[in-house]
Image (cartoon, rainbow, N blue to C red; front, side, top):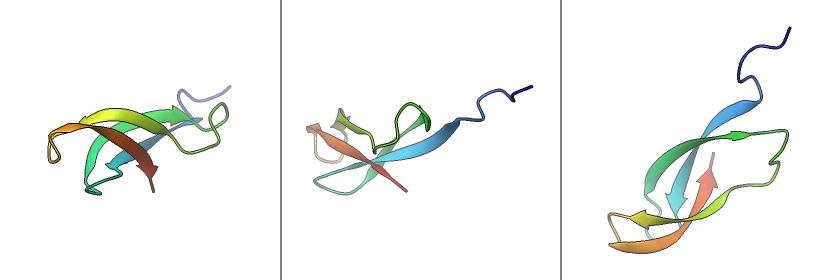
Length: 55
């Protein structure tokens, strides 16, 4: 029997402008093979910027 959340992994999201890791989220590795890119609020920049998945 499969373990709960074995396909999910924790990833951190870094701001594309100031490179600060502001968010952590989980993603399903089977359904989303490419890196996540989300528009999120960056408290350091003070505006909404593109956040990319970091290792």
